[in-house]
Length: 350
Image (tube, rainbow, N blue to C red; front, side, top):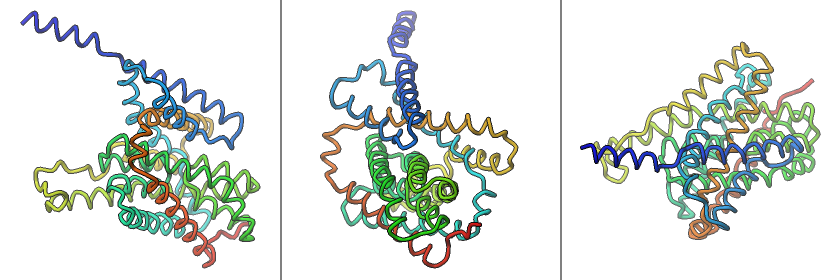
């Protein structure tokens, strides 16, 4: 017995600490935050995930980092999603008029369903198209993380979905302001278009700044946050559908033996709590500013960890279909927002 205990103690001692990998992810997250502070147009999330992907495919990653990287890719990512809720105020969204709510609901719902349909037509596996549908319709990497809590998709597919949404969203940074000019939108419509079509919050900030800043930027961010508010109800709806399918035995025939996904993952509940707190306006602005930096830092660290899970050989096996799906999803959400603006949804700013 003593010999077994000693052996177990030796094995525990030999297991690398999670702090090696977490420290590495946090160091890269810090560097990316610094780059973003120098220039708001720098795609922090894209840089973070690219750094991880390049390292994974160019040089070996020491095994000592593995436990911490796994924590960063999942738990740190989810903590970033929770803090994202502090940026959202329901009163701020409603203040721009109900047209913003209509655009948010229409853009998210139609794009989500269309992405699932296009993904199935392209032959993309269910988990990946579900992750991409969430990322492209709602709020990028944070939505991918939320959907992963329901689908329990492989980390490799999560990384691929994040890569697609970051790349396509980054391309929208210069394209969205260009389209605003071509369509002849005023400040209210321009802000609604950018906030309604660009995928990540940080990408919206960059695109809004290029388009003119000021009113355009503030409107764009508010519209984008309205889309982010759709995260919780969409996750709940998908989870309920998955539970119903599993309970009926229609999802692979597992029936009652299938482990049902949670109706609402705990970190999404945390996200909702943060939204409520932000909407009550009880948190001082300096605290909110620090929380915003922390949220970006956590997501950047998690993006690096996800990048380390990107294997080029595996992506090659997926082919160009995910990129085609990403482009199709982006076109869909652009068309939906254009139609909503044409129907008078844009806020009339003074």
